[in-house]
Structure formats: C-alpha cells, structure tokens
Image 1 (tube, helix red, strand yellow):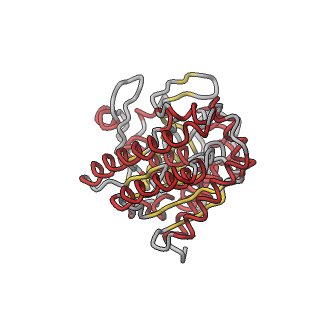
Image 2 (image 1 turned 45 degrees about the horizontal axis):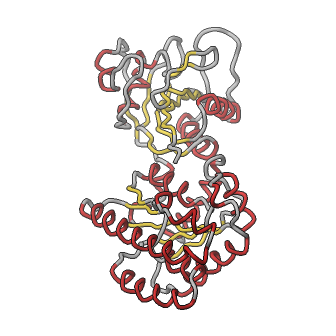
Length: 380
C-alpha cells in the first residue's frame, strides 16, 4: 500500500488583508494539492532582507501522493490564482502570498527550479518557529538536526510575534469521536486505499484484511464449487482472529481504529458462493461468532458500479481476479445493500464513489470527507 508523502509548506503575506490571504491559501492547498493535517500559529515577522510592511507567516504539514515537482507546480498556480505577480527584478519583494516547500519527507533535491530542503530555512526564524509548533519528528536530511536544534543555532535574531491560532481544515471533521470505523465495499471499490489514507490523515490505527495470505483465494477463482467452502471458512476464522486480537489490543489504549472490512462481509460472500447445505452450516457458525464481535461506531459503504469495479480490478493486476464476471460483482453489491437495509441499529453511511479516484484527485477524497462530516453533523 502506497504511503503518502509528508510535506512541510511555509506561507507568508505582507500585502492586503494578510490574515485572509493566509487562510485562503491554506484552503486552496487543502482543496487542490493535498490534505492539510496540521497548521502552526500565525506569526507576525519583520520583512527579511528589504524594507517593507511586516509579514504574517505560518507553516503547515500536508499529506499527498504527488511528486515534489508536481507540488511546486500547483503551489505556483495557487500563488497566481491569489494575484501574485512574480517580477523579474532581483532581491526580495512585497507579495500578497508566498508559498514555499520547506521539506518533503527526507528527500534532497538540488535543481534549477526546486531545492529541498529549502536552502535558507535554518536562517529563518519565521520558518523555524512555526515549524516547531507542528511538533514534527522531522530531521534536516543534510544538516542532520531537528527543528529545535536548528532554532538553537540559527543566526536570525529577528522578533517573531505569535498573533493567534489558525484552524486546520480537518478540525471540522471529528472522526476520532468514534472508537471504531469500518469502510466496506465491493472487490475493487478502493476501501483499503481509503482506509489507509484516512488512518494516516487522522492518526488512527488500521485493521487491514489479510486477503493476500489466503491460499484458497487463487484456487477459488479457478474452481469455485470445490474451494468455496474452505475459502469462506478460512476467511471467517482469520477475520475473527484478526478483529478480536487487534480491536482488543487497541481498545486497551482507547485508540481510534479504522478497518477496511466488517466481519459481516463473510456472510455476504458466503451467501453468494456456497451451496444451500453448506450455507446453512456456515450461517450457524457465523451467528455464534458474530454475537461476540464488536460493532463499528460508523459503517461506511463505498458503492461502485460494476463497470468501474472491473476497470479497477484490471488496473491493479491481480491475476486470479481478472476473470471475475460483472454478474458476480452485482450479486455482492446487492448482498451488501440488503444487509445494510436490515441493520437498524448500525450507524450506516453509503457513499457512491463511482468514477472517483482518492489517490489522483484531491477533490474526490474531500468529497468522501464531506459526506462523513455531514453524517457526523447533519447541520453542517
């Protein structure tokens, strides 16, 4: 599973309504580049290297799947959208907005258009002080020093005054009020991708299904009649053990947990794959197990139409999945929807994600977060 990059951005403004400029820039970064995770306090700092009005400055931590050069390109587009005109003259200038990449994971880049880490960050208190607010476990990959250590040795003696707190976009989505959230969906719906991304963004523990370890899965797709029952029984046993162990372990520390399945999916798939006599036996065993399992505080079903599911399955390239017919996916979707209708005591949210891509399109990810936010607070 691809992990997101951790990007540190610095924002400054000394023209117009500086606070509005900073707040709008944070919003645009969140909407158009990546997920804004943390935002520092707002600082007022004297202009550095030239005579002008004081700057408002902050830094933020962002998660993204994009490359450093793509982030730079989108950052420059945001500056242009906000009215910044980069002049050809040398030296420092006043500006309505200034957006710089300070750090990108532990990457070092030294090219004509992009330098990471920012080559002057260690000499800028208006960068280091806001960065220190973020409490990051980040070490300068060239100087091999933490932000705290860089602050102690910086040659910059300018005065940087804290003005106020700034809001992070994720503050309005109190997902952590739930102890246990399950994301479900059909084969190829993107539930594991979304679960992993949400866990990273909201600092949650993950419970991810271990489907790749099941030896019966490739055999099932070759001969369903022969391998359906051992497949479903092995999945049920593994899901029960994993959820029991992980949820009990995390609950000791009152962790926020997100999972890419709920154990009821075992019964949904078993109804489709098993013969009638096998299904009755399976149901008896399942009912015993299900009574003991904790139920998610929020159950999110990601609906994808079968055409899009087949495209996703083909794209991810697992050989044993390539012959899955659309009719099988339709049955699974119907099984989930029938289950959801029957669960009057389950806090359910259905999101139609057909045609959406959580990795390549930030707007699609924010669409899902918006649905969750409105489920938590319908008045939003």
